[in-house]
Length: 336
Ligand SMILES: NC(=O)c1ccc[n+]([C@@H]2O[C@H](COP(=O)([O-])OP(=O)(O)OC[C@H]3O[C@@H](n4cnc5c(N)ncnc54)[C@H](OP(=O)(O)O)[C@@H]3O)[C@@H](O)[C@H]2O)c1
Image 1 (tube, rainbow, N blue to C red):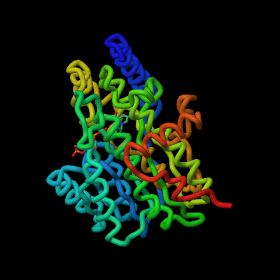
Image 2 (tube, rainbow, N blue to C red; image 1 turned 180 degrees about the vertical axis):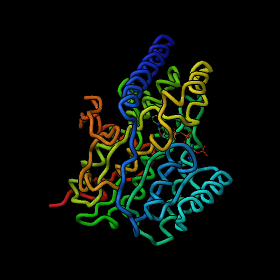
Image 3 (cartoon, rainbow, N blue to C red; image 1 turned 120 degrees about the vertical axis):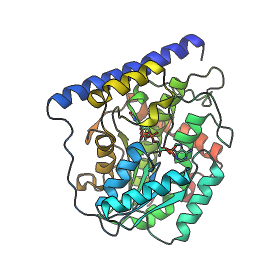
């Protein structure tokens, strides 16, 4: 990517954000984002990756209120301890706990999955929510560009390692669910299959948007594989909107100032931002339904190229190579 295309990537990301903000403002004038009500979910277990802050924390709180056993996963022990204490106190649900997982390290993801499996409990909902945005160019422990490695490959590996538990936990009429948090920036992303690590020319905006597009392709391909294998597991992708969280801490100061002054009006609150993740995790309307791009608790179309099955397959195969895992199609051949 040349410096000019890096600038172009930044402009496109800001344009996507501005369009969402305008839409949110109009919606706020027409009544805002009323909180949907869901039936209690006792006996169901959820993992919320990145549940210590922002949208993930609000998602975990909502699921805990519904009586779910909620495991928040993240890479900050002290913050997590505080989050668990607050969630237990506020929801009166004692089944809230923390398990360490650094999504920027494959070894940590493997260890997390091992620790989770040692609990011998089912897994009904996996929320792939953690993320970083527009960080300076740096690498994960395994040498991947951080947006691609953490936001995308981390969740790719995590989901694949948990698929057997999800498959065992889902049943007819009670599918297990994979909920993956993407973003409107996927509409303006470029997925450079020859340089997924953005090593030729780094643009933080381009790299973030690329990781979010990869998550959409991942979800659709995963859903195709799960359906072909006759699994009682569904996969949907969520776009939370523009939400007032710490995700914006690496952005240009003007944007941060705008967020500080006008965030209350233009941005969703973390609770509002979490509504579509919670909806995807529990609504009966989505029982057995996967492969959907959800925004404001409604299915909308993602960018046309994300439905390209050849591209989905290509990215999936590359991701298997990069994470060193056996392709799930070999582990779970199609039924019949
Ligand atoms: N906010 C928005 O406007 C917006 C818009 C579209 C999409 N999204 C997406 O929504 C998701 C949640 O973002 P947010 O806005 O809630 O941001 P946030 O408040 O910064 O929360 C991000 C979460 O990810 C965790 N995390 C970061 N690095 C991690 C790592 N290496 N291992 C494990 N966990 C890690 C964070 O933990 P620590 O706090 O301990 O670092 C935190 O819990 C992200 O995927 C983001 O791309 C957000």
